Image (cartoon, rainbow, N blue to C red; front, side):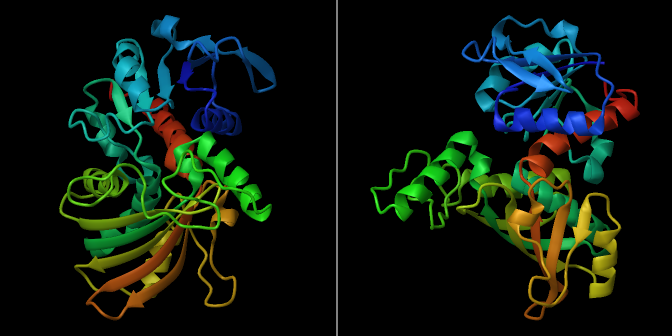
Length: 335
C-alpha cells in the first residue's frame, strides 16, 4: 500500500500522519508532498525521516491513495491529475457539492462509497462532520425535521497562521500593546467573531451554507437546517449548540442510549457542575462528545444538545483516514 499526502507540512497533513501512525496502517511507501517552497524539508513518520517532495513534479502512478490537505485551489489544480492513478480523499471544499463525488463520514453514509465516479471522495467541513455523526443515530430513530445550530469554532479551523495570531494577540492584550489583526476581520483575542468565510448575498456566510448543504447531502436532503457560525479564541476543537425538531416522539433515555452506542460518539451529560465536555477536553480525542441533552419544551418533539469535537481530527484527519480504512476493508469496491 503506497500513500501520498498533499499538504503534508500543514496542520491537517501533519494530523493525518499522526492518525496513520496511531492506527498502524500497513503502508509500504509514504510520499509527503508540498509546494516547492517546502520541498526538501524533513518530516518524521514511524521513527523515520521522510523528505518532502515537490507536488508539481510527483508521479501519482506510484500510489494507491492520495490524501489532499492543502486547500481548494490545490485540489482544483491537482486532484483530478492524481485521480487518474489513485483514489483521492480530498479535505478541501472544492468537490464537496459535486454530484459525482461522494461526501463521506464513514459512520454515517459509507454506502455512498459504492458510487465513486471520478475516483475522488470528499471530506466534509469540520463543523459538519462532528454534527452529522451525532445526528445520524437520532435521525434513524426519530426522523429529524429541522435543525438550528450555532457553532463556536476554534481558530485552527483557519490553519496555523490564525493559531499563531491568537497567541500573539493574547500577548499584545496582556502587555497592553497595540493589537494587530491579519487573519481575522476583528480582534480575536478575548473576543467572539460571528463571521467565518465570505458572505453570500442572503446574509449567510459560506461556512453556514456549507453546514446546511453538506448535512443534506450526507444525511437527508429533506432536513431543514439553519446555522450561525462564530469564531472563538480557542486553539483547537469546535463546539456546537444544536436544537433539533423530530417528526417522532422520543425519550431522553433513548436519545442518550442511541448516542452512546453509536461509533464515534460519547455522551458526557451529568446535570452537575463540570458534567459536560468543553473544547479543551475534546482536544486530541477521536470521539465526538455530546452534553447538555435536554428537551426543548417550546416545540413538539424538540431536543437541545451541546456537541464538542477536535476539528483537526474528527473534522479532517481522522475522518479522512477512516474513509481510507473503509475503502481498504471493502477492497476498494468503489473503484
